[in-house]
Amino acid sequence: MGKIHLEKIPRHVAIIMDGNGRWADTHGVTRRAGHTEGARSVQRCVDLCLEYGIPWMTLYAFSTENWKRPLSEVSALMVLLNRFLKQRLSEMMAKNVRLLPIGEIHRLPQRCRKTLLSAVERTSGNAGLNLVLALSYGSRQEITDAVRGIAERVAAGELRPEAITEKTVGEALYTGGMPDPDLMIRTSGERRLSNFLLWQLSYAEIHVTECLWPDFGREQFEAALRDYASRKRRFGKR
Image (cartoon, rainbow, N blue to C red; front, side, top):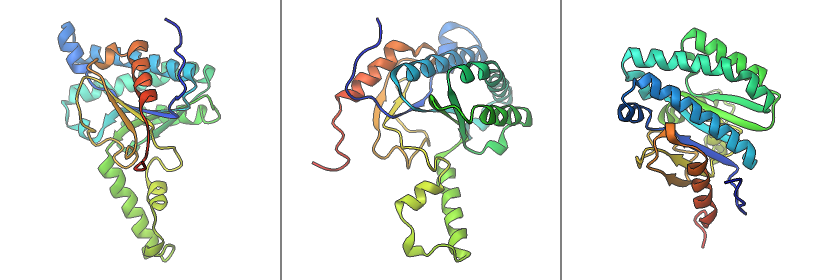
């Protein structure tokens, strides 16, 4: 079909990747196989962002609530994450992709954490696409940590309460220094934020597709871009 031409392209796309388990059930395979297929969709979206010149993409890869899943599934996800980072590192370097994690990274297994931090360091000089992985991430915990950090600065006399602004809070979040998402895509038809970037998505355009994440590709991505381009963003103004 080729690349579509749009006047408005989002600077930052955030995606809630939902539906790996349902895809697996539908196809009669294991949930692990569903997650493996989902990893292929990640690569497709990376390539599409590069193609369209979208400089930021944040993927909700593993939430704080996901730790409550069966141990076997969590272990499989950690193995998949570790493998994905190792196998895709050379490709990220070749395609100029910079990797950035947000979340309670210290909760990841040591092997995954080591691989992740190594990939972050190796790709730190890349500037083609900033790929943000939300890992062991929960927005309420993020905001709580930000409030705690600000309170510590106030207690230490570094910051006066009346000097606290939205910018102060934003800079204290895990995403401090990153632009807020312009477009948030959620797959599998669910219509909720699921504790994802609650502060940052305040004015994002939201696109929901019934497509399950492992089936998400060019057609669905471009449909989301068309939807975004058709919106009039007023940010509360007339």
